[in-house]
Every structure is written in structure tokens, then in C-alpha cells.
Image (cartoon, rainbow, N blue to C red):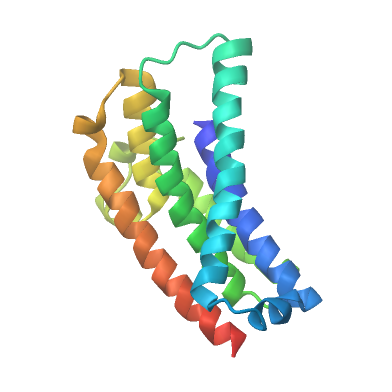
Length: 192
């Protein structure tokens, strides 16, 4: 499950750091004079960073996990990567949202510690969710990591198909959409 934690961390950090760097260097203003909307700018950031992390995930899974370590994978790698793409949509949106809250790169780093540690520790990847208090389980059902861990374990370990993991796909799409809308609102407000 370290691969899952790395996917989350990379997506949030890369996206947020890129936005903060552009704001600090003034290149956001260059984008604003172009004939693009804030939504188009944000979509470009979300999917460019997500694509980088998705390619790294696929290469790690194929060449390191299956190739060098010879770990058998029971499920469909394309289905896992589709779930990873939805997860990346949610986490890159979260990265932009956090970057709009932070005023500088050091503040963003501190904010990441407050967000990433609970996401990773309480998502079910390191500690079973069933052993957590019910309140924590309910709260963590709003986190994209929880659903991604569940679908990744089902697909990669147990060979589950879409008929089993569709609720996690739906949850990731919903959470990602909400995070995208919230991040877009903050991004628009930041540009004014």
C-alpha cells in the first residue's frame, strides 16, 4: 500500500507546489491575459500533474512490482489505473485547494503535514478501518484515499472487477467533483 500513499502524496504536492510557485513568480498573471478561463487553467493543472503521476504509477507497478519484485497481481491493471486516474482527479483538486489556502511554500508544507498524515494513516492502507472508532470511519469516508485503498486492494489482491468496485469509483468521482468545485471557487477568488 506504499504505492497508494505515494500516489496521493505526489499528486497533492506536485499540483499545490506548481500553483504556489507560479503565484510567487507571477506567471499566473501571464496565464490570465490569455484567452482562457480560470476553469481551463485549473483543468490543465489537474490533468497534467495527474498524468505524470499516473504514468509513474503504471511504470512502477509493471516494472518494479511485477518485474523486479515478481509480485503476482490477480486483477486488471487497466481497471486499477482507471481507479487511480479518478483518485488523482480528486487529490490534484485537493492540492490546488490547499495551495489557494497557503500563502507561501513553507505554509503549504505545514498544511500538507496536517492533511497528508491523517489521510495516509486513517485511509485503511496501514491500519484496518474496522479497528478504528466508528466516528473516524464515517469521517474518513469523505476522503478519496479511503475509497482508493479499498478499490486497489480489491483489484490488485483479490482480482475484483468493476462489478465489485463500482461504488468506490462512484465515490471517487463524487469526492473529486466536490473538491474540484471547491478548488475552482478558491482559485477564482485568488485570481481577483
